[in-house]
Length: 435
Figure 1 (cartoon, one colour):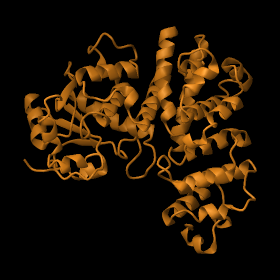
Figure 2 (cartoon, helix red, strand yellow):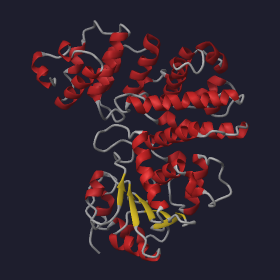
Figure 3 (cartoon, helix red, strand yellow):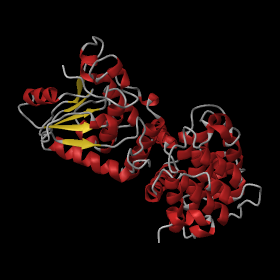
């Protein structure tokens, strides 16, 4: 069998073992190569989830389904996708991912909800036309599972008649349980990568906010809120998220908060883990999740969904007390978390410009992209809140740590934020400023 060239760091094992991904799974007696998640019902086709297929395998699936077109939905990285060899007539839809996260491989920014919706609408059109849809990554365990759950959350109409155990609308947990029942090899929902969980939470929040009647009772209120908890993994910083995408998330949160309030529940409290005492429940979240929680809570106040006084009365704590709890271990907060805490709470966040700027330019494992954009956002926030440094490390020092490309991004974002880049750049850096 022809050996597929694989260059992704997550797939080099195949090359080391002199196996194609296909052979690796065919030779394993413990795992099926692919499984049908949704059978053809009525006029729509089947939805299949599996490992990376060969062209011959796609042809066989087509033949087994009466010659129907097979649409390949790929969640491969750019490296993995470039190593594939499919016929040019093969229908395919790609969701460009950065490794196993939910970041766009070409831009380094989080994939926007509108892009995910467009891709999944395209998948839905194929299923509705009676075609077979094949979701895959390399192993058919994690990324493709994430893709299928996302699709079924956005298009629950394809779940009608599949299982009586699904709610209306179905929760992420219910959809994930259905997928795992059909394909036991997939990664369980809680073990998905952080970025994947974040995007799923944003998708679920969007769907619930559009549902006219949620018929909330205590159990349903908790279940829906626990789906939305996943959005605490989605990056809030504008170095990773488009402003319009984050604004949509805040609007959906405000709408759902009001829906809960009208039914006699508090959406934020329902998001927290079970336990005795607000602070103890809040403490079960990771520092980054805590930061996102208080930022979103402050956003509800800013949008007028609730007054600060009423919110703090419901929570039983001042928001700044929760901010201080979240920032007890700053090493576990990303630079983006810190930037957004400064944006939401100003000096109350407990950071200064130099501390956050140093974290940005350090470029650690969770701050891999858009250092220039993050630094520009920080500079805007610092200027608005009178936090610009007069220390031994001025702004120019941190700008000097940026690469050429990052400096260009820094300059472009400053212009977008209404600031003059040449006020902060040295003479030899001004060539990076676009006229």
